[in-house]
Image 1 (cartoon, helix red, strand yellow):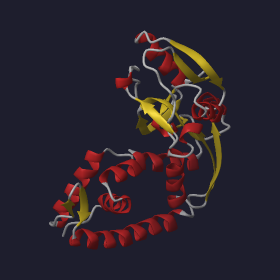
Image 2 (spheres, rainbow, N blue to C red):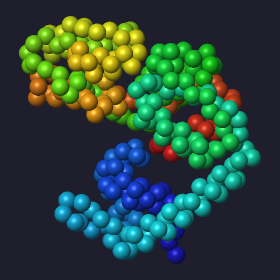
Image 3 (cartoon, helix red, strand yellow):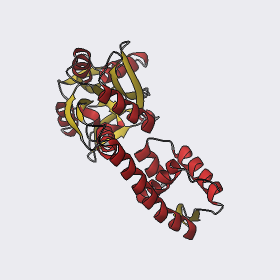
Image 4 (cartoon, rainbow, N blue to C red):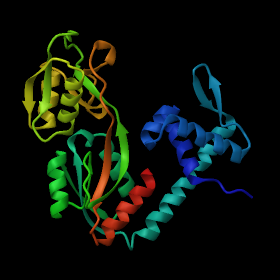
Amino acid sequence: MNNLDLGLLRTLVTVEKTNTFSGAAAVLFKTQSAISQQMQRLESQIGYPLFEKRGRHRELTVQGKQLTMYARRLLAINDEVLRTLGQQQVEGHIRFGATFDVADTILPIVLTHIARHAPKVKLDIQVDRSPALMEQLASGDIDMTISTREAPGLSGFVVRTSPTVWICAADFPFSRGATLPLILADEPSIFRQLALTALTQSQTQWRINYLAPSLAGIKAAVRAGLGVTARSVEFLGPDMRVLAESEGLPALPLVTYRLLTRKDTINPLVLHIFKMLRAQFE
């Protein structure tokens, strides 16, 4: 008898919760095609179609709904077993860092995994800019961090790769061909570097209209209509819009967020949590 793949079942439940493959992809940090392939594999295991097309949307079939109901129960038992058996070993205190721009997006998902699989672990959360977090990690003031940076003495893995885009207020009067008013972070900043490199290479005229030491200041300046900034899509709010290449601005590269810890760490709890998260995200 075949055994059901719990990973595929978790994806199915996520698809049912988000109502779309794209929604599940965002929650699970996978591509939409990867979600589709997983569901095809699950359909092969079951021997029945799990989804049917209704216009532009996919809906669960009768068999799909039944399997989702069982999947939720199986996953609950699986998670309870892992929590119960691991509680004696997985206790302690971890100091965790994250950059401001992922504090509302990637960080909550990472913390949810820790809370689910290691509920007795106590967390101290430090939200700061990447350069400060890297210094704290190197000095041992934090145990691990989400950052856009890399360093030789660190172990890490990718938790998300995000597009970098030009962002302004929704009602910002952008004028193609005019000198671009920039809103930038002060040095050092990877997004400042990406923006100025792209503008210089494309020979786009620009001026710094607002310089901010924090993400809160950058957001305030964007919302006030003081100019345009380059940030990852995690920065976007409902009162902002993306300026496309068709509006004359150069393309920006992807930015990669990694979970990092020191290679020389000997703390068994840090190593355990790092390994657990790596297995989840990779």
